[in-house]
Image 1: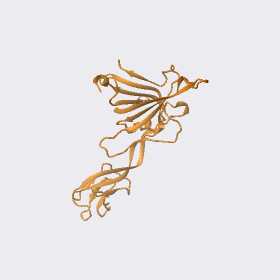
Image 2: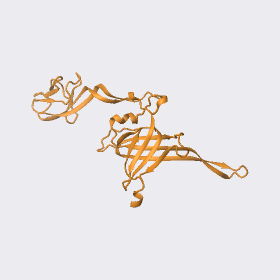
Image 3: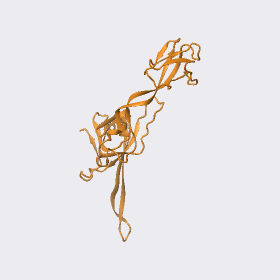
Image 4: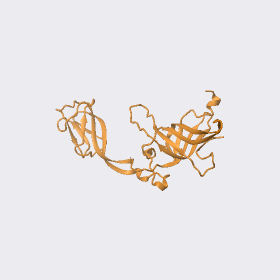
Length: 258
C-alpha cells in the first residue's frame, strides 16, 4: 500500500463511543458491513429488466473492544429502562455498592518455619479456608499440617505435618467483599444509542464513522484465557434508520477531518 493510499483509509486501531461513553481504549477494531437488496422491474411483453431499485438497506458494525473496563459490561449486556425509553441504560444493570458474600480468593505464601503467614484479607468465612501444595496435587489438613486464625487472618505450618519448611502453598478462602456488579438478563427491551468509531489516519487526521441509532445484536464472547494479551470483547451493532433526517442521510455518515 502506498503512503498516499495509507493516509486516506483506516488501516489501524480505533476508539469506540456508544451513547457518548468511551468503551475501552483506542486499540479497538471495527468492520462496517453495508448491504442492500436490488429488485428489478420487468417489461410485460419481453420480460426484460427495465428498472432496478434498492430495498432492504441494512448496515451492521462488528467491533472488538480492547481493554474494556468490567464496569462497562452493562453496555455489552445492554438493557433499556423501558419500552418507551430505550435510549437509557437500566440503572439496575450496574450497582457499585453491593457486598458479595461468596467471593473466592486465592493467594500463594512461603511457609517459613512455624511463623505465621498473613493473608491479604482477614476474616474469611468460617470453614472455607483450604491449603494446597505448590503443584495443587495435595490438600493439607487443618490442625495437622497447619493451624489457622480466622480473626487474625494468619496460617502457620505445623512442624510435624506434611508441609516442609520453606514450602510455597496455595491458600484459598471465601470472604465478603465490596464489588461493582453488573446484572444480566430478564428484559425484552434493547438499549439503543448513537455509535461513533474514531480512527486516526496515517497523516494525523481524524476519521469518524457516526451512526444515529445502533442496537447491539448477537453474541458477545468474553473470554477468560491464558493468552498474554487479552483479545478484546466482540460486539455487533445493527443500525436503524433515523427517519427524522433527510432521505439518504438516515443510517450513518463518514467524516474526515479537513
